[in-house]
Length: 143
Image (cartoon, rainbow, N blue to C red):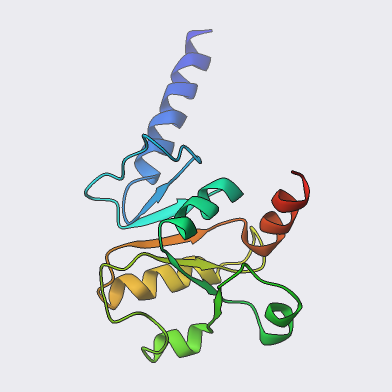
């Protein structure tokens, strides 16, 4: 019994240690959730968090290809490719402006890559929506 408890505690410690660094996961808390000073990227996990971010003025970038973007996208989302972002195109001049990246779905790594690139370019209010278009459309139709 004790060995199981020790294993669970060790796993929890490893998990917490892995969460440090540049990314902070947001569990959709919205109001009352504060961003620690050392958190550089806020990860949004649900549709209400994305809606709140957009309502608060985040510039939203959709990283999907043009055909996918043209078939549907978050209202106001700008289409941007990682290549364009790598060349310094598309991001606001204001480094404190909130920016939000999204891609196709939970397995799409482009939003995290874009967030890292934005950090490297000096942006300080960077977010990405892990669920992407798939979770956005599922969350919007479920209401």
